[in-house]
Amino acid sequence: MTHQESLYGKTPDQLAALCGELGMPRFAARQIARWLYVRHTEDPLRMTDIAAAHRQRLAEWFSPALSAPERVTESADGTKKYLFRTLEGHYVESAYIPDGERATLCVSSQAGCRMGCRFCATGRQGLQQSLTAAEILNQAVSLPERDKLTNLVFMGMGEPLDNTDEVLRALEIITAEWGFGWSPTRITLSTAGVVPELRRFLDATKVHLAVSLHNPFHEERMEIMPVERAWPIAEVAAILREYDFTHQRRVSFEYIVMSGLNDSPRHIRELTRLLNGIKCRINLIRFHRIPDSPYFSPGDEAMVRFRDALTARGIQTTIRASRGEDIQAACGLLSTRLKGGI
Ligand SMILES: C[S@@+](CC[C@H](N)C(=O)[O-])C[C@H]1O[C@@H](n2cnc3c(N)ncnc32)[C@H](O)[C@@H]1O
Ligand code: SF4
Image (tube, rainbow, N blue to C red; front, side, top):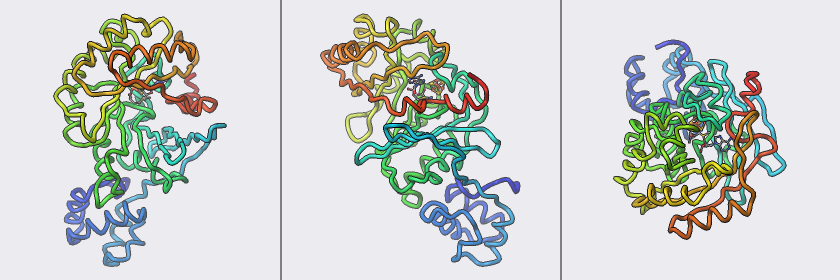
């Protein structure tokens, strides 16, 4: 245990172990969790139902983890991009996306990413740091719009299943009744398909899953997503076939439509074959241009034709509205710029 450690981000089990080490009653763990996650107070000195001597000890041992965003950019459509600094000094982005009754926060799970997808600005940074559970939660808790949030998506920077321990801890805190008490159906985790971690995630939580597909052919997917080499999308699909997505929990596939690369009838046939037996939905995404990239989205009509062709084959398909494009709300562009990366 070091003085750098924070209370925030710890589960009651972890807090109980700490209480034991510090000579405090173990039941104090529940009280601390309540202060942290229900009352959003991380200063031990304000935890008034804990004995004063223990409060003092906690304050000496633990440093604060929560911090306000350092920068915000607002889009014409109301989307806001926040920039948070981690304790190690890296920048991560979160996008706040209001939409009628809904308000979604897109959170980052890592600063940078080591998956190297060719179309992704975050991928170009490489991995700087995996976020702690506290740093993941901070993006929601320290958001000025915290109390308006209805949904959370792990679609910001980083690959959440390359940081599974901390992501699962954050998900536990968000969904537990001693935590934020959110229904798991308000949360979606997006992955490029880290096969060894996928089952663990599916077994440990009930949150929705999104898989970044982008091409159903092994050779072609490998060209744009190096993860395909180690963990083919066919293996991801095989695992998903073992799970039930017909009730509360949903699985969807993200598909950036790239002109001339993945939008042919051949791709439609292969997608149908790949996803056969999985109750799912496909979200078609427009490519957000990043500098020096060779990819282009087709026009609106071609997107609609592609959607209709998939729908005609029995796959529920929607075209995802692009939000915040004027502020580059997608994926790592702002923080990459700050680092001088592009
Ligand atoms: C940034 S990733 C984070 C989650 C996870 N690493 C993944 O790949 O699913 C979230 C989504 O953004 C997509 N994405 C990345 N770069 C993009 C771009 N330039 N335009 C549109 N979508 C992009 C990814 O394919 C993925 O579906
Ligand atoms: S798309 Fe996802 S997995 Fe690929 S580099 Fe970007 S953040 Fe990483």
